[in-house]
Length: 450
Image (tube, rainbow, N blue to C red; front, side, top):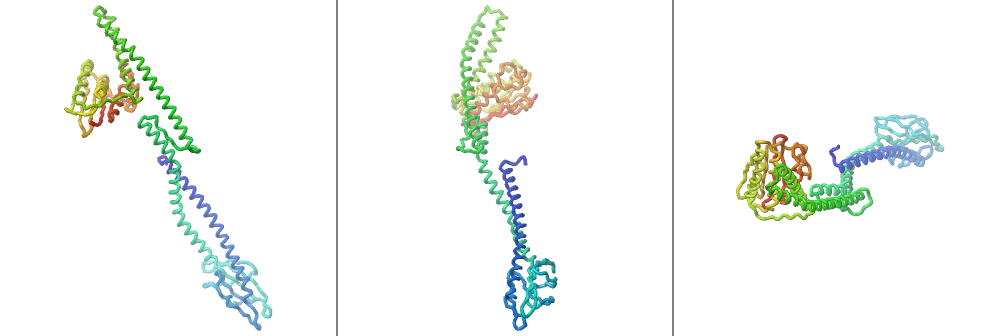
């Protein structure tokens, strides 16, 4: 039941209790109805017997019985007996073969031939004739059979009622939970599109769900404002840091050109230049991501020969790779043309290839491939380096996330893959990663040519 949806759970609960209440109500109703039926049968029996007194009279020492006495009215059999118990006139039920003793004004219950009967006796003194007994007989079993038919009919209708209750309950529950579905869809859309401007936007209401929706929209508005302030702060800080870092790099380059600079100071300046260069790259990545978040980063697409650009990007990384004794291999299909932003495409490849080199093993390789797949361009950057732990695969696209600082070194800011993912998505594509720790990683990107 844990895997059932809330609609199904509420429907089952609603149907169960409605069925329980209905069965309980029907049980009480049939119990009372049965008692009322028996009481009604007894009353009718008494009424018929008492009325039959007027249908018998004395005529010159003999009894004169009206023809109505023999009629079977309301299933009551009427009969007339002498004071000694001899049958005189009337009708008896078929198969009735007992003659209980007379009990004045009392209803007797007897069983005969698997059937139950009510018997009611009244004595009456007829002038010039003597005392006689009027007896009424009615079948209790037949009266109860009519109730049993009604009970069976109700038992047939009960499953139909349960099904109808379930259908009505499900439709009612689904309609009631529509606002919850809308809230869920909005959350999923925000997660998928990473767009905090989405709102649930339910109409005004007074119940708890509408209040939840309004609270959720207010929270989203506050979060959106907070993220906008954070994005603006990141953009402002990046702009402010860009100038001093540029000055540091320029001064380092100028001083390093001095031939009179001794080796110790030269090494110190080279360390400063290297760190400033890493900071400049990080600032550049932050600026790009900040503009992308604010929708200000333009993508200038033009028809490019991606085969040549990919080969060029791979060759540019060969110097860095040789320092770590890593080979860069290429498997590039020639003359692949697509609409793309040249600077962003090269930036994406530089990050992927440099990551492969940085995390590679001595004597290993980084393989760059590019292929056409119908209307799509498919590229892969594969290495046989240290790999990525499985638990970290989903987090590597997050900003500033580093699997292990001791493995990555201080020159990686944790922004490169976030930027790579945005560039691929800006070209209408997607990027995936496969990796085994200690075996290497493979990044695969796809985007449409047009």
